[in-house]
Length: 338
Ligand SMILES: NC(=O)c1ccc[n+]([C@@H]2O[C@H](COP(=O)([O-])OP(=O)(O)OC[C@H]3O[C@@H](n4cnc5c(N)ncnc54)[C@H](OP(=O)(O)O)[C@@H]3O)[C@@H](O)[C@H]2O)c1
Picture 1: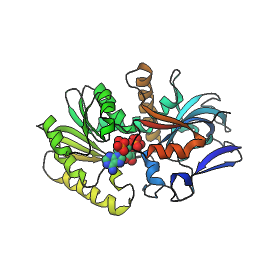
Picture 2 (picture 1 turned 90 degrees about the horizontal axis):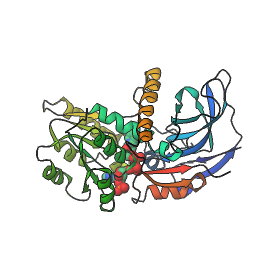
Picture 3 (picture 1 turned 45 degrees about the vertical axis):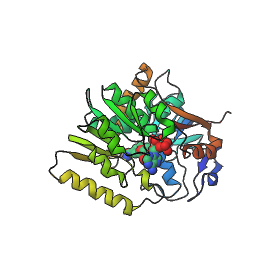
């Protein structure tokens, strides 16, 4: 039997259900993976409110990414071998002690990297790395990272510093020291962000990474220097409402700013872009980028900032903690002990 966490509908965290069912058998091209670590992402804060635009119909098992060990493979599935440690980007399904995955989607986890550490850099590392590539961030650039204490934010700061960029990171007052420790200049997100950024970077910045949206997107746009890019990758401000009414004004605004001849640009980032249209390419790039990010972990160039780890059976506490505003870094779920 396997144990998994079901999100039955729009519920408070204590409405999450632990359920058991027969262990599924892998079919051709599939692997059964024993979960070692999975993550609590901001996406699940939206999913439990029914406001994540790509979520499946209720009920379903959440869990955006996972690290585990292959325990069985299907017919005609020579790789990865049983016993291999692997990582996967799943969007849903990760909150389970075992899960079936397509073998081609599994990326090897190098020796010497702990499961929770590897877990913390899957969706967050891919998102941060790719957005920095899109914005072409390099030595001498100054950027703004909103939510620099968060899972994605803490990696954006580290990866940008690795490229030689200066980072201004916004966060709530309790996380100022954490963000400074990451290597960014922290500013309190309860204040006037535009004024604070203009004081620190009077000529404007090369890029702003904005996962908040809402009215604040105008301030983010105004932070840019000539030639700068606003990378929008979330709508945290609309966590409780979601829907097209939230997305449409943001989308239209970004398109308009992009089209106007103002010397600045916008980009809407989604880590799943290309998965349906070009699946082979998507897989190849997933392998390439995640392997590179794991390499940075192994070398110590970046570190996984884990806010707290919880056992899978303590998922209610984990989700409550992730939504408390206290977390700095990634909230991780690990397997219950046998
Ligand atoms: N586009 C993509 O492909 C993609 C991929 C991955 C993630 N994302 C987005 O990236 C964001 C971060 O995800 P995560 O998993 O790293 O989340 P996380 O670890 O929970 O961190 C969330 C961060 O956002 C801040 N925050 C939350 N609500 C806010 C609000 N209304 N205004 C300003 N700041 C707010 C939090 O501040 P406090 O700690 O002070 O609450 C924290 O710094 C989410 O919006 C998520 O949807 C997008």
